Amino acid sequence: MSFHGYDLISDWKNSQCGQTATAVKGGRKYFLKKYQTPVMPLNNGTLDAKTFQHNKELFTNFVKTRKGVNTTIRTIAGTGGNIVIPCDEFIEGNQYVEAAEFVDGAISDDETETVLSTLSVDVKKLLMQTAAGALFSVHSKGIIHSDLKLKNVLLVRNKTGNYVAKLIDFDSSYFVDDKPDEIVGTIDYYSPELGEYADSEDEREELAKKITEKTDIFSLGLIFHYYLSGSLPEPVSLTPKLEKRKAKGKVIYCWVVLNSGCELAISPLITSPKYLNLIRDMLEKDPAKRPTASEVLKRLREAEPVIEEPWPEHGLVLDRDKLSSGGIMGLKKTNTGGVKNYEITFNDGKKKTASREELISGGYTLAAMPTGFCAPWPEHDITFDQEKLRSRGFVAGEQKEMSGIKGYQLYRADSNSSFFKPEMLLAMKYAVKGASPAAAASPAPAPAAPAPAPAAPAAPVPEPAPAAEPAAETPAEAAAPVPETPPEPAAPAIAEPWEEHGITFSEEGMAAKGYVRCERAEMSGVKGYNFYTSDGSCRFIRPEMAVIQKLAVKNGG
Image (cartoon, rainbow, N blue to C red; front, top):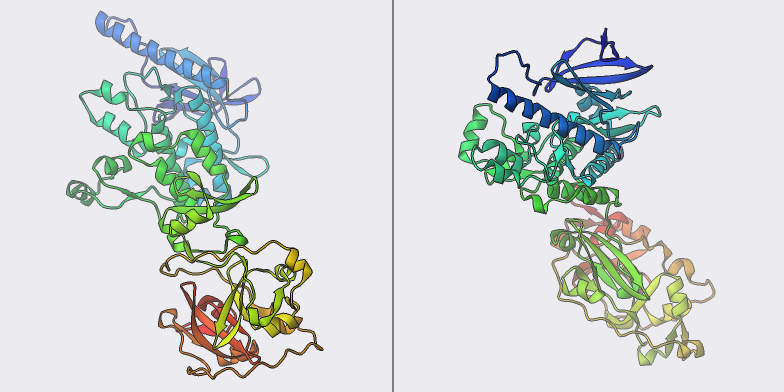
């Protein structure tokens, strides 16, 4: 059957807007859409002149808007792109009809949920990027889609087997500066401002002014939430009135929840801070607080923020719990003109630069270790070989007295540290006797940084296993001088762990690592343990690393 030059290959089917069918023309396949309303009024005497003229203007304006939107979007929508726009419009009888190229590989509405549930987050990220990119192109032309929903972001499997998203159904679209008399959409995906407009019988013209491109952003946020969780957001709570409606089995739309003064809860299935915060921002009740399509696309393209370790020479231990509670989801080292700082990324995507001092003053650190190496105790008459120390991963050191023995606490870049007596430093060639000309020529070490006020300890950064410690590096012929016998500690050979750590020491594990005793210790406000070897060397180890190194086991684990 021929229809305006198209050969129909399917029957007409009823749809939300009217009727649809599949056809071919010139060897290509097309999707036809015949609009049910408005229609060109027939001048057959059934309508009075005023009604006829009104209906005619309504139809004429509708066709003008449809053709204007289509013509504009065609300038950005190429064949096979991520925007599917009608390529032909015509009037058949008294109905407006559009024809668009048929999309091969499109997933049916019935299959969309099932297919989405099988896709990885990386594939869904690509879908979200293509949808946001397509919407950005539409918005760049001053057009509001106005009916974004799951079925209008078409899921398509291309010839390579990959899934992409295509924006379709511009039936309700209009120019932002030329709004139609009646703004429509799909009620489940209304933005709060569109819902307020639809609910009101008065002041609709004034309410229509609030509707901008940001209404599409809200709808797209709902779609993204569905992509990542398989459902739309649920309310945190409901007003008594809404509770009654829910009890009667009525659907409580997201826009109704927000317009009633309640909040939406992002699904716990969405765990990525990046997506969690992006969707939360897209679903803001206030349109001005929602990101633009361009900003959504930019945030989707950014890598998942990470918390990097601080610059080694800054000697910082980050309080990751405090960073999280402070709305920080990313911290990256920066070096601009030799000035080493940090780029902080907040949950809302905003960024700022912070110095070492600002991290400390902001309470984002548990402790600060020294910067550089201290001067040795005068009575030891040694000089540190800083080049050798740095080659072994040590970045700082300070004088330390342990059980009456004067020695040195040496720190690695991750703030883990070990206690060394002077004879061990000499044996391992970390120091030389007397003043070394090379050492004397080297710049003076930076003074130790004062530690900030102790914060409640969070989970410290895991430290490396102590395998690369003295025993492996001490030359066989360089026996360490025997020091005076230190006073016996009052504590037992294996101390009781700190109660809050919930661990039990393993004598077998300690023996396997060469440790003969341990005691509670506190370093820069962090509670841990000093583990001693038979030669008196000591290493400070935090509880989680003691468990990892099998020096202890978790109670009940």
